[in-house]
Image (cartoon, rainbow, N blue to C red; front, side):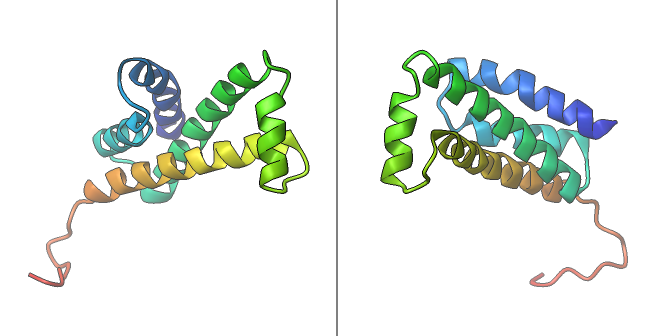
Length: 122
């Protein structure tokens, strides 16, 4: 249940943050929500990945459809991907990795330490 709440929060708050702030808010929004919600690392990574990947894919399609896929087709030829749809998926995956890794970092920062846990370097 908390996975879907985190995913929904990322999907709703990221576009608002992107409107007012720079593009790197795609890293701060999942980080802050994963930190606040105290979710395990793998689950937070998946929520951050899916939230930002869906957001970037929708934004890419919104900008790509009016110009009849001209730029994405040219970029797919440049990167030898053979299809503009594959280029959009790769673009969304790169954004998803940024969101997933930032959410994972936020969840790992929140990990509670067990009293018997050995902390190296201290």
